[in-house]
Length: 104
View 1: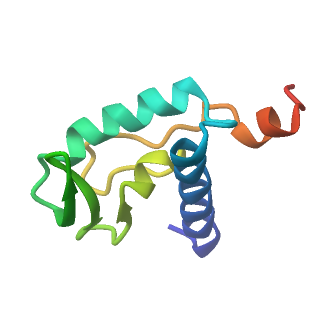
View 2: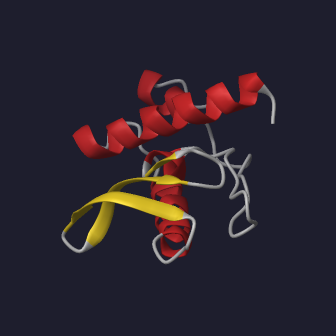
């Protein structure tokens, strides 16, 4: 994976995750569904190293295969699972347009 793509995945993941946590502003319901689906694969995965739990679910951790932080990578549309449990998604509309009111 290129450095630019890695940077983009991290940046978009953090942006989407923070919007989800703060106010859901600009957070697409489609991205929320994708993150929830990804979570259903990641939580029981042997490659997820959990650092903290909240309400019985992992709240903070890291994938030992790709090095990405959990749960941030769940919200990076283009990110794919390094062991093939879920694909990257390039069909989710960029949420930044919704925030700026520039829907195409």
